[in-house]
Length: 163
Image (cartoon, rainbow, N blue to C red; front, side):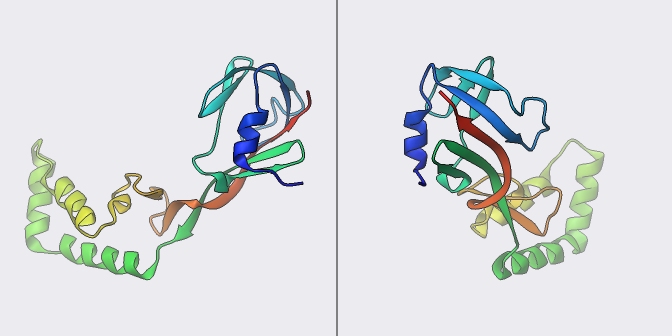
């Protein structure tokens, strides 16, 4: 039976033990049973390491005594975001912008940095400047995608409450 994220937080109490069944970080601790040694609103400590809760309940599954934490999901840019990217590209091709960027490169000035930051803020897309905003953040490694807290990504951890 599926349970809520709130129920999971209630069930992860001091003194209980959990067994790690899966980790996307490697299998070093897979199969180990560890006690919960401290409980906070955003995490539990298992022995001497912290297990932080995902940012939203969308990244949590809790069925019977097994719980899974998922990474934040990512989606392609939507049409509005793509149009804004094209608009920004046009700005960067102007002679004035190129001149300002060259000045920034030779001095300790950051005019074009703040120009771009202001551009995205004015568009209501602060997250497109690689700062998290409203649960969104542009992917720095793949600029055609946005990390979105409302989407479930890949499985990160799976644990089972054993005691």
